Image (cartoon, rainbow, N blue to C red):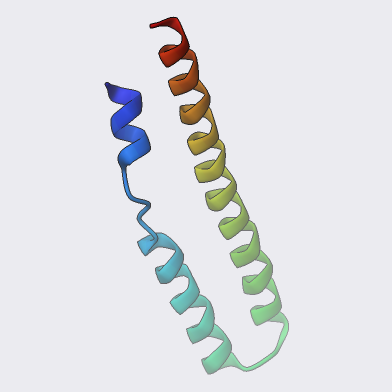
Length: 72
């Protein structure tokens, strides 16, 4: 039951949108200098970490669902 609910959940991309707006605001106000490069690297790492974690969780939930359905 729990795995099925987790598989049916819609992805919420509000964190991604907020981080993107913050990144764009920093670039807009500060133009291109060392601060925007540092923020860009931080933004890229944060987005990679968040998206890879979400994809790993989805893949794990799918595998668990297959195992549970195979045992029934």
